[in-house]
Length: 398
Ligand code: HEM
Image 1 (cartoon, rainbow, N blue to C red):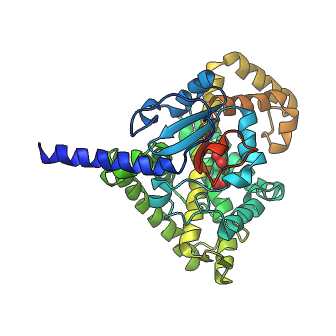
Image 2 (tube, rainbow, N blue to C red):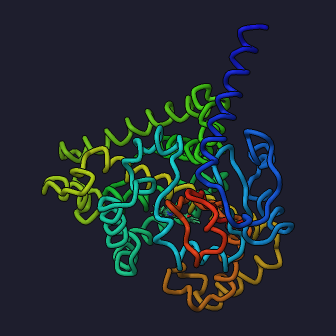
Image 3 (cartoon, helix red, strand yellow):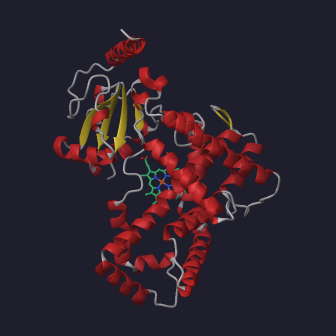
């Protein structure tokens, strides 16, 4: 027997023992929701394929809107209808405020020091409240409108001038720079990149991080295999994290040394004031790491999502010239050829709104939700969760 074979047998034996011990906690008195049978040890992981959101959608057509799966030793329920999703995300939101432990949060999101993966608690609440007040509330969106409009105007001018010269325009690139500039002015108060090539580099980092975060890392579900990092995911996560960390260190440094003062009302200023006031949470004081981790959440969640959605909208319109023509006619009649479309024109552009909604439906930037975990979920009101002590939950948006 070769040493490798011996090692493999040991790993498999340990994993079976682990799964057995772990499963003892979740012995059910009721049948779980329906779902496909999985493989030994890995459960349903090998069945997910390269497009898990499409696999899960196809499974929902067979098993219904609530499916039960096993990813390694982890019990997972997947909600695939708006009704079931709303029970998890709205009615019983409080039961599912935590995220399951995962290597992305550990190795990329500063070991859960961020907002998205932080355990539920006072820091979790305070960071979300700050983002709501300064970024997502109706008032914040109104206050940030001039930033969005100036950035859209300069993008339009650039495209127009290139077009006049008959030059080729890399549409993907100008849209990316526009969303990054608008977002970075809102987050840190200045355009973080003066050169398009730096913005392209950040986009590549964001795409890499999103792709790594979307991989179903076997080590997260079969703990006995984590040390092997069989897909090489953790190694790549550590590398991309290092690059992001250098970027955020430079941002903080630029603000602290006064190199970039910001526009005064940006989120970074608010956070730094908080830090200087010695903001204290149940989990300890707010730190530089928390601020960098929150910036990481926002830069990664907010750039490629927006720009890829706009790119898809343009591609779909090019593929459907009849709809493109109708949309141009609507713009001509409502806005006219000599004005830029403004956000306040949108209520008068029903076809345009329908196109946007259709693009969100066809090409959701995040086709699966960020998983949540219910601790001690034995809530009789949420169907089927009586089964598990710990249940991971995913919502399919695709
Ligand atoms: C087309 C644009 C966008 C789409 C389609 C989109 C979609 C989503 C989806 C589906 C989620 C997961 C919700 C969940 O499962 O719990 C999410 C989370 C999030 N998004 Fe977006 N998003 C977009 C733009 C943005 C922008 C511009 C920002 C920031 C300025 C942002 C910040 C966030 C944050 C921070 C989260 C995590 C929320 C949490 O943990 O509670 N997103 N987004």
